[in-house]
Length: 144
Image (cartoon, rainbow, N blue to C red; front, side, top):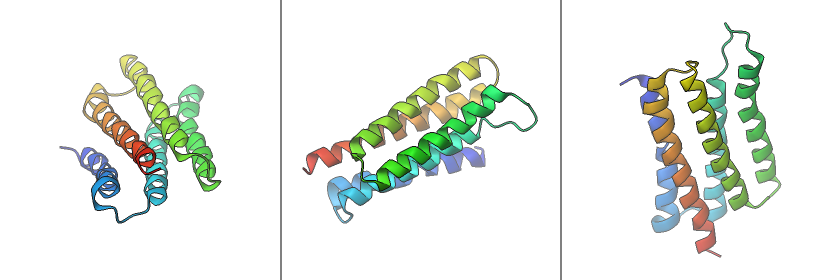
């Protein structure tokens, strides 16, 4: 197993802890849990986008595609700090992850990404992360 796979899967551990804390342990404040979830998801989203940057290949569309997650994440972070509805923000992040997954599938089918990366990393991590975020957003609804 490659180190980047191990590090990628370890990135899911904080989300699992936040779910456990939010539903069972109840030490952390719900707003804090949602904020940390949003910030961490934005970091992951930005890293996935940065994967698309290829400095050897001068492809404007691919570079723009790699930059958009950073821009989207910055907007989500600002809206979080401005106390925008966190459930809406989490839903937007999940939608963005799934949209990016579909776009990456198309790039993989065109031979721009290795198939192994997509099958072993992107699909399971995006599915687990999206499900974790949905579970965390439901946490807010259950404590109102």
